[in-house]
Length: 209
Ligand code: PRP
Ligand code: URA
Image 1: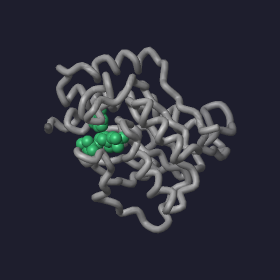
Image 2: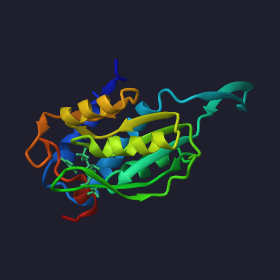
Image 3: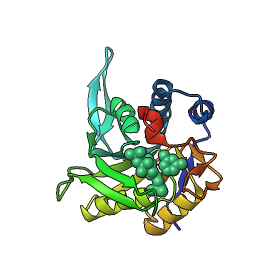
């Protein structure tokens, strides 16, 4: 059995998704929406991280609390994963960020790696790959292949919108990787775009086309 695919049913996420999808949403609002949705996904995607006990003195007494023991690494896929990483870093400033540059060739729809400075043994226990769009799944699979080659023990994927084709491909390639999404859409069109989707997530975040 592959690891589960979690699709958020949170009303706030669904509310924000409506504006994110709308074709008339401009980049500043689009970035705010990516950040707001990403924060919710981050809380879900980190639900299995390990904690260690820590003693805290409140104004009334000493008590045992917990802090995160795992070294959490955020792995944004450039460009579109950047907005997700920024928002998650605000929620957990101790996380490290490992950028991976991948773009999807428009003709073949295959991922091309153009930036990877991962050391042989990256300093993290848990890696969360961040990319708002899981379309054919090629980019997510390539990113996770890179992390696996570097020996990262635990990997999760967090995305905003996925196509069923991408989820199936990712689960076939990396069945152990749990997937956290805001929406699972209908299908891919002939150009490999998610339908209904939101268009090109990188262009819409950064105002390019
Ligand atoms: C988009 C998106 C993913 C990829 C998804 O990136 O951000 O990385 O396509 O498609 P796939 O699942 O079929 O691989 P794009 O190649 O447009 O690069 P960009 O973020 O730099 O615009
Ligand atoms: N990349 C995007 O940004 N959007 C899609 O729908 C598919 C790939």
